[in-house]
Figure 1 (cartoon, rainbow, N blue to C red):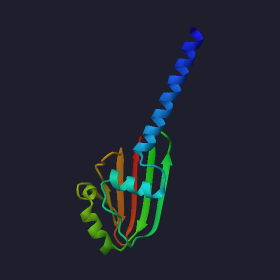
Figure 2: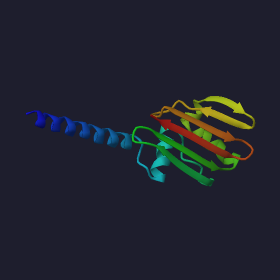
Figure 3: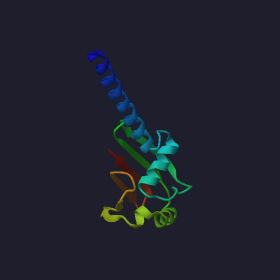
Figure 4: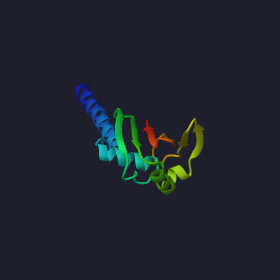
Length: 132
């Protein structure tokens, strides 16, 4: 009887680990570049990124229990203005300045944190959002 109970406990524990990992992966929106971009836009409540952006980089970091996305791209300031206006997260964010950059601390949808930094002169956008 004890042997059977030990096997059941190990099985249930293993099953819980698998369920937890699958749930965390589903919450992150997958791991592909397109999925990562969509997750960032959802978590930070951002509009579609400007179509003419350049130098786009997407990093996905974390484990089954945490996830971090870092997106950088560059666009002309004239093209960023409509994107900012169309992004609910940026319109409702707390604003700060850091040199010639505007830093938006976004109240995220599903993430623990979301910070968007836009350097006005160069049009460089740096987005960092994470969940744990």
